[in-house]
Length: 335
Ligand SMILES: [Fe+2]
Ligand SMILES: [Fe+2]
Image 1 (tube, helix red, strand yellow):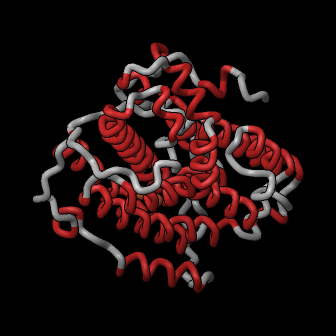
Image 2 (cartoon, helix red, strand yellow):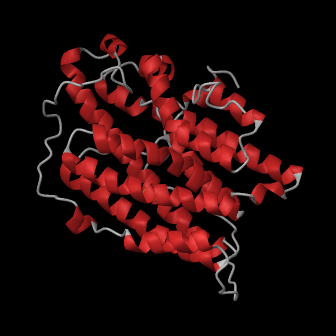
Image 3 (cartoon, protein in one colour):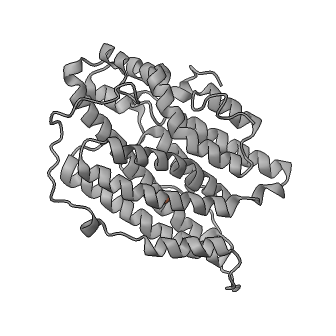
């Protein structure tokens, strides 16, 4: 697919999906298993670590700190990173950069929140569909983590920011694909590899660079949890693809290719440009092509590339797609 294809640009802003929610129909099988013996020591250890690492949104986070949306911010120490590159001044005058930084943060946090709800529901699904009991137990403790993540970001958005953004079409479509899927390993590929791989890096960046201490703190705790969730995916998927038929592998490749394409649209910031009064096409062009933004996306996709490689699914097609869509450098995906 070429870089300028309409699919990658996403639908026009006035054709965004119904914002009231997603109602996804799926045919899935619930599996119960009477073998309770421990088969995967590393998964059992991860489960123990997860139970110990629980935190409480109400008491761990200091909610008394005020957040003044739109207030003046410290000058960026490294304006070359992410969306705050010098060329941004061509789209947004410098005296509006603080507003843009707040809107960008609000947009990112709202996308985190929508993704967390997706993770909550998808991982709940895994407790039903994974065949072994140890994985069901781990998925269940992950569900409680995801509940906490939804609680934290929702409270932050509702009480502190008071600015909401709808889910991006790309993320909405990926969550739909994941939740329509009956094969449990593909749910892992969509959630534990793609969504959480991106979320881990994005929340780590948020934990050091966002504008106020509350969201930095929430994101620090969320990122710690996400690292365990990715480990869960890796433990479950490693070695799994050696024994699949070529047709079964082609299905995984197809799912991942579409997921990566959808996520290539995830960071184009359409709604933020719209709100800032920047022509959306110009903003999207900047987000897609400006070197600082390309480097930012490459950073975000680093973990996804690493996991795909570890589970033996970084196929030539996905390598090509990652480079073509400017999600990774040729060097990062080299065999
Ligand atoms: Fe999460
Ligand atoms: Fe997670």
